[in-house]
Length: 158
Image (tube, rainbow, N blue to C red):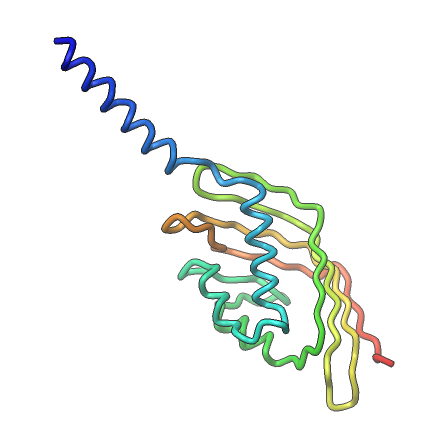
């Protein structure tokens, strides 16, 4: 009887160990890191925009510029600009998490040097953004992204 109880206790311990390690909640740090990774891949310094597909779910979409885009449509939209330099400053994160997902809202201030036919311009944006991320196959991925320009300006670069 003692032997059966010992095996039972060991079995329960193993089961709870396995469950608890796979059920660690999503952390705020994971969420922030995923945002920074997204914008690193989106940067002009990274020529391989297809890496964005690794960061999103198959049914991902973004609502940007008052339009719904799939990832392919968004990449095509971004590629219509001849961006020479880009910079994003992410701040004011508000993050809610659970075991397998997260919702985040943030401020994103972007500055872009863009080449046009009539000369270079500087585009400044201040966005209010939010996203829903889910854990898929152990990886945190974007399922939805919303971006609304609170203010924007375009000036001729000198």
